[in-house]
Length: 394
Image (cartoon, rainbow, N blue to C red; front, top):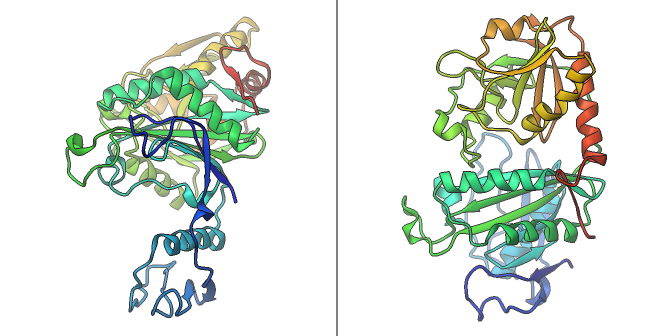
């Protein structure tokens, strides 16, 4: 069984979290083994023996039909944990979670069953929280410090005081990746006012909470052209668009709308009709005059990868592959008439766009500047300077 490593507590709670490094297991209390899942129609049915509960079965519907539930059991903590574990085993998922840190329990767990947060966390029931991420490649964290800086800026704008200083946040993140043994994947982390109650104000939350998780990944994303559409979902106002908050309902709806139209993502326009950004990425263009164009960051999220692209692209200017680099307002007409259109983000790196709505971009193929930028970012992740690559001590 994976262990829980306790190494740091944000509050003086010696009785709850001893300062000395300790390890505890989820198997420390007896857990009922009488839970099994069987497949029936479109739903999984957890079948509980009478030794655990008087209920014979509970439906977990996987479609829009409501399953009939009767005799809902009252579970002990150990029975609830066992159900969580079985749920993970049965439902699985497309991602593998390797390690999680939580300031609530003051340590790292490598058991996905324990990777949970309190329901009364203000981030859960009020959407009051911020997050950020960093890529892991070949045992190095890419642009960790740049992402932490943005994370703390977002926290200040969301009026959330972190439970630790920057140095300790950085240390926790590196230790979490180390405990995961993950050499290629992603690190994602959150800050919230913490649990306390279900009120609108976080005044009842005694201490902010910090969470981090490591997700196993494959090799870097492939370089392949995609289609995008103009999003009809309203963009967030600049005050909220410039904060990396957990309020991603507009982002999710925009992504879903794109998928319904056989596209990769939707492209947002700002209130003046200028090109803004995608739901989880920035957007750039290469004009017919060979200028790299990107919307300015005053009304959108300032992407760490986008900023790094602007720095790396200066090499293409020196090589004569680009005539210049410019940030400013871009119209949809300018974007659709560009030689190249490029999506930029930590999850996709550099992704060429070959069609926007009904308009083919350029010649309809992945462009040379996009390819060059993709190669530069990949090289930067593998052998860039120490300012963008942080080694993980496994």
